[in-house]
Image (tube, rainbow, N blue to C red; front, side):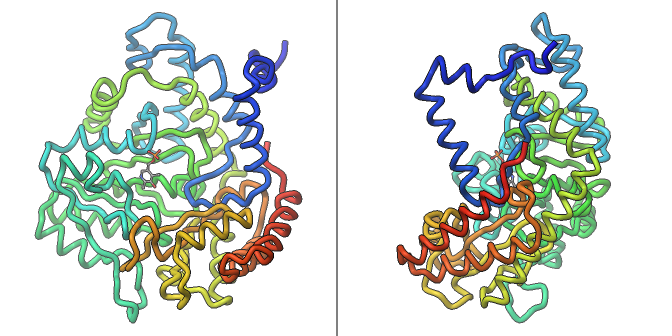
Length: 428
Ligand SMILES: *Cc1c(COP(=O)(O)O)cnc(C)c1O
């Protein structure tokens, strides 16, 4: 018997739809030939991709294991139960819902379960490193509910410049009496003090929610403190540092909340679960439970520190002055260059280094231009890179950002990027 019942899916595709096959093949080459430094991206294993590309895409499984609305769900119950058990073990909690299609869907389900329209909750604003689903006026989280945003420390003279302003969190909690306090961010390079948030939540009777979409892999691998037992609710994506398929996850220790979340995911906000993706989540959680993943998570952080240190040595100013996790935010404005985040990210892309423009605290530029560049080490670490390569990468970034878009300078960086990509093949 062969190991894979539905093998060679891409070869089959080449024979049946050459147009789509060529696009996917070109994307495979792009990923191999560039340095992926978007902090929210990673390279999932072939095992994860095999599960996501499997026949499990074919089935309707509305409901939960043992309580489905359709026949023929036995194997789906098995795989969903396995994903749930592994998720609980990985994060050390009692309940898991593995059905959210994405991080945004996980957050929507939690809001739907816990808040009434117009209810107040506290979070960080998008431009300070928060997420769209944490109260942006263009998102349902901002349109239907009332976000109150707590600040970072904006005073550059303070040693905790760029960190969460925990004193303000406590004051604002007493002042606004939110139903929910939300921590966890998309562009925050420091450790989150979940205990301090717990104190603030207790002072006003709020529930505490951590959205660990970015740092889930670090939490799972032990290189960032766990939100448990301090947080009532934990949501995450599965495809960022956790290195699984694109998807979401809701975790809690509270049985009453778990029941509400199950109803809020289905039938509250979703229909049939993506069972092929849930199979991929089970595979990814299995990978993350292995000791190798602990090494990976610690190397991600060591690599980010090495990257940050070399950028600082080269004269770049970083948001909060450095990093404790997987990401680094270059503050171009404070670094004294005219370059915007938009220009910088473009020059880096031309040099084969894939990043994104990002607002920094007190950004004077619009969100479409920005004064920051966000960099992450999860994907490069997956390719097997260590601190030495991060020093090289920092120097390449420095040269691309100082090129002012000059073609021959960028081309030279591009050649060295090619060399690095060749030396560090894509993982299997
Ligand atoms: C990425 C992210 C999400 C949303 O994830 P999607 O899967 O893109 O919906 C939610 N919260 C935070 C903090 C994130 O960084």
